[in-house]
Image (tube, rainbow over all chains, first blue to last red; front, side, top):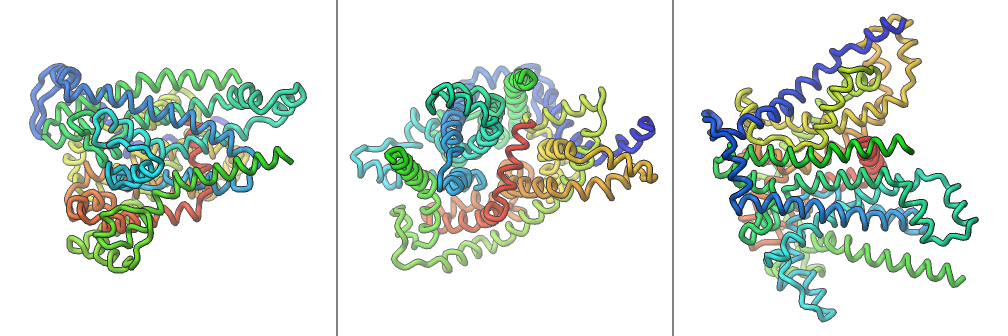
Length: 288
Length: 276
């Protein structure tokens, strides 16, 4: 009976998805390893070994993307996880405006990234922008958010955080709500205060959703392109270039081999970070 | 008593902070979309003395020979077609992923998980599209969007299949159903709630997508709404009022989705994140 029942679960059901996924995702991914080793014009190629990678990692205007992308991913995921956790802990309390606050914070996530980029480009204008006008009122002279080379990457990280903290928050809220109420009661009986509850119950028991948020935010951050492209185009100079914006610039310049090498580097960095994190995450879940 | 007052104050402070941090940027777009270009150049939050929403919006719609209405048509078409394809392909795949086990399934699972995280390879994808005659076509971008959204959708379907009892399969088997009949007559109708979630989340994703149309669908004729915003920036640079009118217009479809399906959007994202 069971043997013939497996016949109903035919592998043919994979056919449409398989074709789609293999042709438009897996084949290009495997091809990228080959074409990253060539000088490539789309119609013609010749082999150059690891030259493209060498250029990508040693040319200062290109290698800065590697450093910036790591900084961007670390910065956005740290902000999102810390603030997202505090927001989630706060917004699982009994509040009258809880639904309203959650929706407001989540809302920017459904806006398109380039719309958000243009909105903040205007808000962050050094002399006329709303942010610096407001800071001026309370007697602070605001920085040149996007024009100062030391500041620009950080400003875009803040905007990314503004747009994405809502997702971190809702994932963590779901994690916190799944914690059985008995644990909190136990702390109460033992005479613990709300801070104890947060430290000894909420934080450790929402561990798996914290891991998910870190992974999502980090991978999203390392791959990101839109906000930087709309807000700074990698400038001033090359100070805010990310791996993805360099790939686009090399693509525009017709350097397809170098652009593809950039893609392979991105792929390796993402797997190097994601695979161990994923293993860790699944193992931790089995423990609980 | 003292404690509840403290709580109330804390909540009021939170509401104020959220209104400033998240409300003001949105208010800014709304008020500036109705200003004259000189008023908008001052870039203040206040409402215009003589709001001119209608003339700004018609000007944006007419710009570059009615590029925006065409872009709305293109974006809607791309979104609808890729979601139909996605739901068909991912629901079938999720069905088998949930019901079978063994070595081939773990290999497939691995590739699906990889697709969730790995960045697509841009230029090789263009090479494949050109080979198939799909580069710069609506069909091409539809396939790309469906393929790139597939891992997330398959994961949601696989997860949801766990809630559909296997006894149904057994009963259908006893009744003499084939696999296809089982899937289309029994399983697929039961997957409707998760199909709706997939459709909502992916349509926001695809409608808001900028990178893929930028690479795979260049050219003004086929522009999507996100590309119009990008293409218009040079034209509008001194006319922030029109830029904001454009932002307002292209944010309306996702906004409507958010108002109607807030709960589904949130629960779908959580399910995808936690299982991924």
